[in-house]
Length: 362
Ligand code: G6P
Image (tube, rainbow, N blue to C red; front, side, top):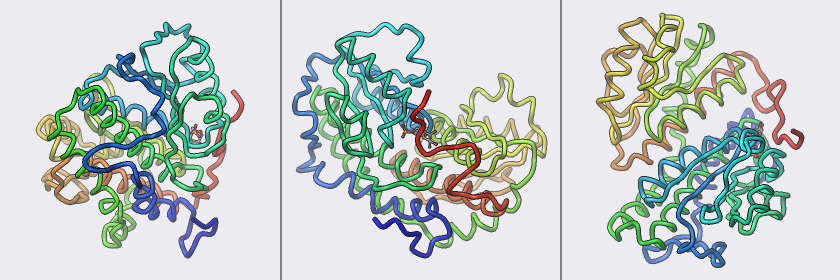
């Protein structure tokens, strides 16, 4: 993939549009006859692994949190996730029956690399999910699965995140298959859902234009809450991070069911709630959380396949039969929303202030 903008206004925009293609790369050769092929893991004896621990920073940390829901729900393996800079100094109790995974786009993030070294020293088996071959993290880990996103130039990560989640989904299915914790039918329908993602990630011009028009209503206010439940909670965290990184507006990702324990006190018309309301997962629970916010006058942007009468703005998603179809479509929408808000504010989308593409110092 070329290092030019190819007619796009920013690299970030180009990278958002590329996601459909690069996710196809991530999947290439890794699914065969309803089975997951990850030759990278040939030296891994899953019979000796009974849990997974993942360490990462930033956007990669959000991919890790998403994976945690998949590992437990689908592969029935215990999973826990930690921010690498926290993990390093907490004197963690490490267990050699736990597989240690690090996720890093660059493979050079200092905190993640150090966390990996600690795990290795403790005798754990280590696996890197990484976009850059021959990076420090790849050279240190016992095994690596490359995410194949191609060069990512925008400081705010987009296609790297999408390919990380796809890789982790593949890995979940691989673990489920090899540990026999997933039945054949589930595996088959998961594979079918995975193969639909490239199509879901094709940007529709109509949706992009709608988001562009809508973005002018979200340039002020005293804050944004991106809310979601289950795996849509890490997606909410990622949506908020994208917006903060390039718009410099205050945004938080929050589990929708937790709003009542504090943040709802902030609700008024100048508080913008971006609600991720998938149809395939906890729709009614989410609905009542959003109704509470609406009753407190929060301005609501609902992203859902189902029209929501209380919404001030509504972005309609396509009907999907699998929650991950909804996950990827909503990911795309939140990325475009951050992009368009940032452009309207006149910010440098690709080089936001105070941020670096990879943080190689502590
Ligand atoms: C920096 C970047 C983020 C990125 C994080 C982790 O803070 O600005 O976009 O998510 O590092 O980077 P990594 O390369 O380890 O995924």
